[in-house]
Image (cartoon, rainbow, N blue to C red; front, side):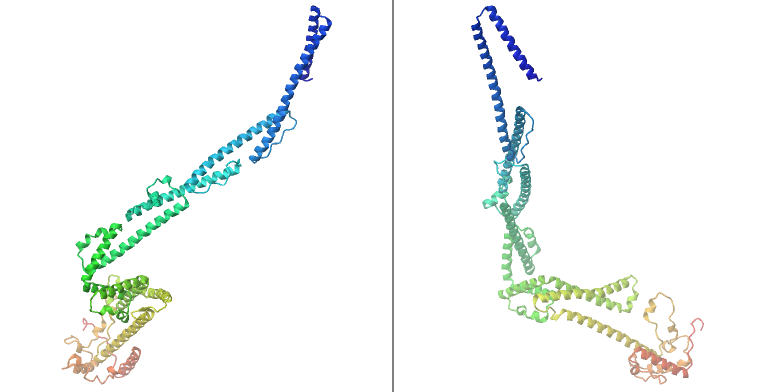
Length: 574
């Protein structure tokens, strides 16, 4: 039996005991039966009313619980919808009281979650509004009165983070640009004039709107200042170049130039104004010294003519160069011409410098080639011979590469300009080929001259009995071998010698002596040669090989008449 049933039985027992007790009291008092009945009815009515009241209260409690459950269900469904959550399922088999408690607890939790999300949303909205004011950007696309989902809040937080990063980036960019603007304004002696310039330079950085338009405007302002600064620097540099040229042309003293040194470095407004004033002053002096200035410009023109490889016809095309009527118009023409030449040289500087490098390399190559053909070069003991040969080999290898590179540059220049490129009035590549051809001809000429010289020397040796000399280069081989050919020199060529000539050669030497008696050296060929030898200058073979063959034939013929001469003994054994 349940406890509630036991308590109900005890309540009935108590009621019965109370009624019995009342009955006993009434009997003792002697209350008549009709009054007992009346009193018992009063007790019954009282107990009935009390129980009905209690039942009514409990029934009201039940009604309230049921109503609360229904209300909580409605609230929970709304909260779940706002919070984008699924509705909780009711627990089956629980009492109304427990059911009401459970659903009420769930509603309270959902309400707290909603409150928390709304508070977070409000804080993010406040931050977003501040960032929008600073960055001049659009607010984040979210409904402020709607409960955000967790994903929306996370996306909103990420947006705020990105906006803060953008703010820091723009702020750093703005501060960097602002510093440059301040520096440029100081260099240009520029004072902020517009309201925007004052906001950028004078106002607090934190109050400056970091919108994209403002950042773009700040960059534009910086570009304008940089252009002005570059323009000022270019103008100042142009003035400095003009001043330097005018100083040189007018031969301004160094002391006077040094006073102006400050303005030859800086490019501020006052420097620009000073440079302009100096140019005007020098221009006035130039007009007073037209003759000297014109001659100075002509010297510069001549230098650029050389740099640009102008031909004689090209130089003569500038007729004012040869005029003697020195006036302002002539000076103006010379100024325009030197400017044109400067521009022409600067536009094609790389090409001209390449041609100059080729000319220098070619000149050095020819010098080394000349040294290579000089027999005295073997006397060098400092190692220069090996260095020169190595340098000559490198030049011989690098010159064609440089010519190939120049050919490509010239082809590009001619394609761009639509005309041919000339060096000293001649196409450069034709000029190069001509130089190589002249070099080849010169080498052939030198070779022929050496050959003819050798043939002539050999013939003279045969005519006058002089023995063949050892080539010069054998003297420098570092050996101490005596020159045996000296021992074979006839006594006729060495008067007062201790040993007489060989009998077989004495007859020829007598004929040589007769040729030289009473005649100068220049007339040595006036007397006919020895009849035993059919040699003359006119009969010398055209090539060395023919000469050797002829010499061998003569040697065979002479050996039939004269025996082979003995080798002379040394002076110590004679």
